[in-house]
Length: 112
Image (cartoon, rainbow, N blue to C red; front, side, top):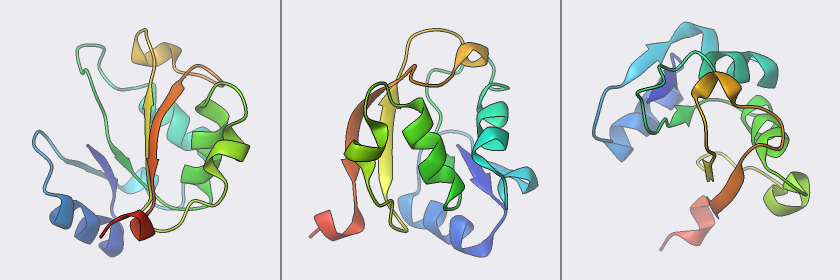
């Protein structure tokens, strides 16, 4: 997991309590969508999955950019706490626009 150093992002990670390594990255706080993409491309190729905990509007813009097809129409608003699950094939350094498939999009209001 790559997580912003912001307090709210850290609290989110604590609530989710994901397995695996958690890396707090100061560069994610205030990062643009392009900066988030650059950081994701630096993930080691032997890492199978990454969760990115960041901030709007950049996290929404990145999701829209990465989703093949009509990302903005699929995602729409990206409220605080939303989770977009994307998949793609290839090494992380090849991650790019319209190169992923949206598997699911969960908003906090969807939870009971």
